[in-house]
Image 1 (tube, one colour):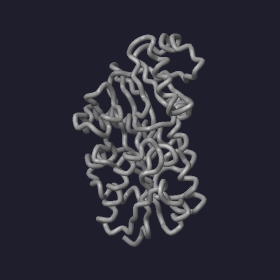
Image 2 (cartoon, rainbow, N blue to C red):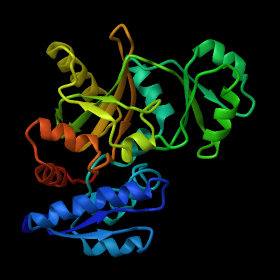
Image 3 (cartoon, rainbow, N blue to C red):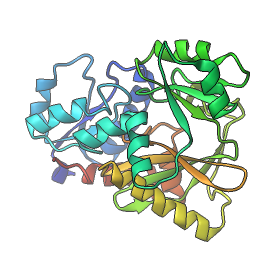
Length: 301
């Protein structure tokens, strides 16, 4: 397809999610090439960024640091090369769970109760305040890297130490036990909600990418009116951060059916286990069509 010109698929990179990105990017590249797009793989861990000047458009299939945190987006802005997904500010905010929560709370979107941890925190007091279980997370990591589910009193300090290996900012979040859901966003459209039912303790890295016993429910089982309401809220959560193009908004539900928005993913996975392609398929959009639609939304600014 000549309208897109020469397309670079950014994949790999240097983050802890490199292997997932190679998988995502490889599948995106194959889909583009199947449809006649002049697309080439580009691994910024192995090539100089200024080589991107030779390309007309970029499909970002990088995950994690330097890929979805605004860094590569800023470089592409300077080179004036249109790229997929959110811009610099929204990408940086989306990678930062703490600041995402602050913005969502400021506009009245429901979020789980949380506390920020450091080495001087009163861990016992945080356990009492949030109650158990508590999820402890590095602030700026993806793919559930460095996350611990604290189920017993006295374990929070150890969980903090594990998360702090990945990030100086560490988040403790009240566990919400009524189910985990995700909403894929494509342009101005919120796709059908997926309910995620991991066979593991929670939806960790293994459940996301390596296991075949994680169940995905789409339709998700919520009443239609409630689903439409939550899809609209997810779109609002996406837009409040300034996100554009495509992405994914995750939320939890408690046993009473109340929703709590968790985080946004501005460069979602595109592997055979990934959620955006799954939701798109239910909406009648094939993988190849999805990839082209995302690429068509590439822009600057």
